Image 1 (cartoon, rainbow, N blue to C red):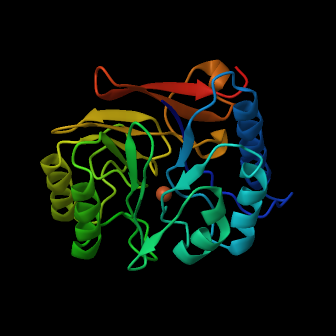
Image 2: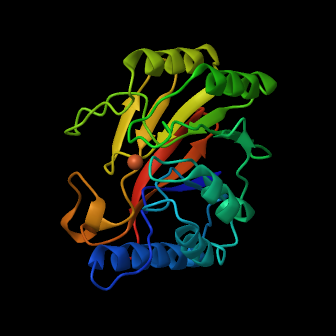
Image 3: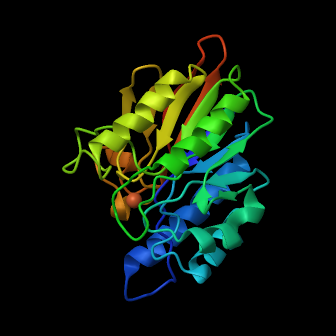
Length: 256
Ligand SMILES: [Fe+2]
């Protein structure tokens, strides 16, 4: 099983006065074309949030118009810049985006690995968070299938990314710890896929691995990369290794 992960596309209306808006759209177009030509296509695509710049319906329309040509389901987690109702309305046809108690938390079933989108957005705020309602929704989902390897995907990492200038992006370390303790209690959880930091990172947590995918576009990407990749769209490919019960991650450049 092969997964493609993109993150932090920050798509907005194209504005020639703001070249970044044009670059972000063209990088997503290049990604779509690249996926279309891959010999071994991913089974699904995960977008770990900040799909849009301002959460506007027309921004999700732009994303949908590009991603719908991919014949692979695309699933979304909610970023701090996304607006949950507009994201769900705009993009639910591409994969599945289900709201429970107004939180974007849902499972993707039918693959060798089960995926669960976790909503870490503190509404109208930049930092990540969680709460008892979200944790109980997650707990219920995890309890449904305790024996299937499961990966969670979300926008804000609930752990420190020490290579960042702002390493911890949850509003409350106690809440992040509560979340991670819940994850550790469910031994089927093998991986947390995150975004938000705009840089690549990987970590070993108590009972599972975790990783952060960099921004797709160079204009808002952080961190060090090979010289030939610096102007290219970057995303991650995660190959499931059933014998090792873990994913093998490869940072991938479109066109190089
Ligand atoms: Fe973010």
